[in-house]
Image (cartoon, helix red, strand yellow):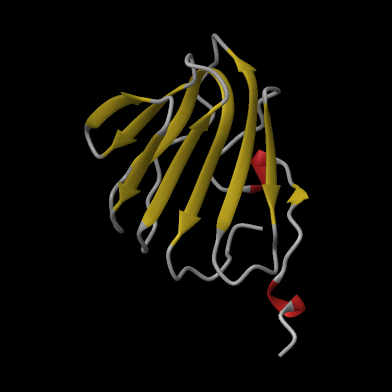
Length: 124
């Protein structure tokens, strides 16, 4: 069997191409339009004193957020419905379908990965 068809290259893609998000200098977003499940990888470099760049929004499928730190200062503000949590440096977050949510980096360096379960790729 040839498994090469299951290997996908992620390419740089502006954060602003995703609904409810805007570009921010400290984040480089990587994404594959062809991957069968929606996923985005954000490389965060030296974030500090940032404005909110992700508005609260909702999906009709579950989402997983994975935060992997390169330093002990890496923190995110996670909002789900009316709750706010400061998380990091190494955290996984499960967001059930239908819940208003947002994730915004506060400070530090590392990776943020978002995976939507069984979602057709809609935000290209």
